Length: 514
Image (cartoon, rainbow, N blue to C red; front, top):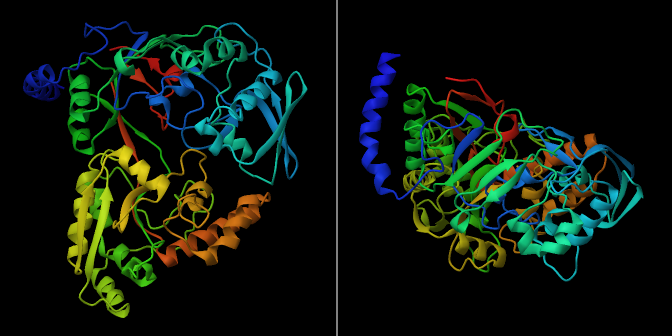
């Protein structure tokens, strides 16, 4: 223990000046905080505050305020939330039985009329709520009785129960009184916390316990968050004990933090980092040839990326579905690092001397992702493919992605985002002809994708998804890299079972003392 204390003093001595120069001021003025208060360093702010119908994660806060009808565990199991149970009566009819006795933070009761009102607002033709595009083909909704809701879809959709985990229930009277913007500033939900204040530009949100919530708080009655974009400063906050928890720790800092008695907990995430390869284009680009795309996958040493750049915190990816998900296909042959095979494939495709590519990338998806992109360029250069990396901002990336405005860019960094529904269907559709701004299109795969989208038999659907995975793998639809993962730091005085994708389930955190 004395060695750890000595190391901590050495590290802290080097951090004092850095912390002073960052202009970051943590929520508590004292290192000794009330044990019922949790001080959290989070990398990004809730850009839209507590707005319930946005597509972003609300800065990790949305489901501290709200609940859906269903909920995911940190490992992706779907459980009841505001709905006690659900049933698929017909291929297009779902019936949800609701929990009784649930109330909002303003005291109003939750019932079937609330669900109907929430869906009516989501589909309000006069307001464009981004979350609407995530909710599938819902066409009708009605209350059968005070605690039973019927939801009808325009076509069969096996994912409706999972989609309902992503839709926060709103309190209609407060929504009508406050309006969209007012509700975002003072969210009224059934979750365990309410907002006390947001701070300038939502950078210092403070949550306080909602005593009326059905999700009872184990220990933490107050959450003081500080938005700290710089990962090094979040690490400094843990070492100086100005923070009790820090979300998203760089792999390089894990060993040092553990040596200083900080607990590291990993966040499960079934999404996959990749380079999308643009085949929807008017020219005769080499990447239109599947053999070339396969060569790119064989040429990159993904295991080195996982082991050395990301510190062994992630798995290498060879297909667009993670092992935790339906559709993962263990029979899909991996793209093991094999530069000689990559060169052979390039020669077979007619490019023995290689060619040049332009990749647009943005940082911040994973710790160390800038190094990942540089490693890709280095490995591809070894087989004769010269890659120009173009760093772009996230807003520019979103603009290009939604409008197919890629100009002369051949590929771009992208995630197969499987975490929202813990199902690969949405990411499969994005890498297909059915995407609103397609960049990769395999016409031969479309009948299978269309069938899987509406297949209600779980066994048949799983078989279809496995076939889709094999098709994606054989066609090398992308340059797959690694699974997403997140490391989070926690002071030893606190314990939490499992971290969620959006940070942690604050109400489940316990205090165990010094």
